[in-house]
Length: 466
Image (cartoon, rainbow, N blue to C red; front, side, top):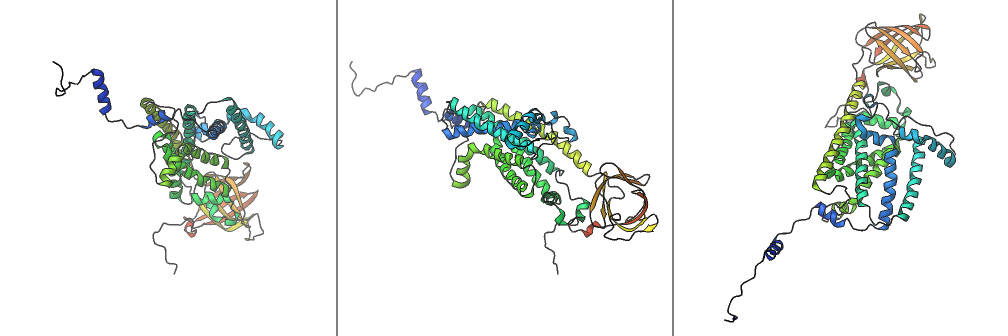
């Protein structure tokens, strides 16, 4: 019988139709960071972006490879002499020194570009090295741009940013632990308390103003260590780069203003922290300044699957632990070496009586052979102050059992040999020879509480001067 309009039409079902309909009804999965990255992988970089990346890749890549300290910081326990706090190897400079010597002569007219054994300072050889890196980077960028027609280098950029981030993190861990366990800027020495402020260099002023406050130095180190930790963890890399940027901005300004000779290193660490933030510039602008929502990060990263990301993150965290455990015991040992048990003659001693060959020597400011004070502070060293207030550092060997003190100049030439006798806690008598003459000295210990710098105590309430 023919089908009429009142007869319902039975729908035709098929497996394909059911599957397609279920997919259409299934809620869409929210895109995660990997989806967004995959979606923009084929995006074209503008010409300025490509040129800037190529120059930064060459310049900062060569800098991290050729500057001695950065790779050795990451090497951790593999660096010879790390446990003895020796200067890091400078094999890069040893290989390049003949070429840098030639460049110094041909370009700058400098006859000698000496090889130095200390890294991290603004020696001439480092400036010549920076000049060579800059020239190679400029020429390499031009050639690269002429020959390479690709519109993006995302995979290469991903590896590059990981390398730079780890180099910055290693350097920050090194310097941070040196302040967190305060060995980089120790407390002012006892001779410092006697030195007029006008005799200090700007570097001395900076070092003493940090070292005089233990909590302040520890907090500075904690900020640098925290920045390093955040950089070693991929998910917190942006926070780490921001913190390092703030830390190194302050350090770089202090290095410039107080004459600290590590300006090239602190300046490059600042620039590399800004480089790490460059792919996140728009997102940071939206959040920090424009009060706008932002999408997930599209910064290049060489690991795309969740498994590879977990493995890479674990490896980077382990590298951070490796670096920290290499520097931590060194800083602790150095701290202990700076704070040995005090000798019985430790302190500042004022010479009240001075006799030479049995004859009393009056305290005349014109007599440079008579001593005004004798200071025992750092192990193995002593400082005597002449009557004209000038200071002389000498090597000191103190034998408490035999009650003997041997003094020698910085060239290890014998200067004085005394037997000492303590008369109470604050009185000392020295008998022996000084510059070939028989000398007897009577000394009184200076009460260190007389120095406000040494006797400062934290107070919430400002004391009433009245």
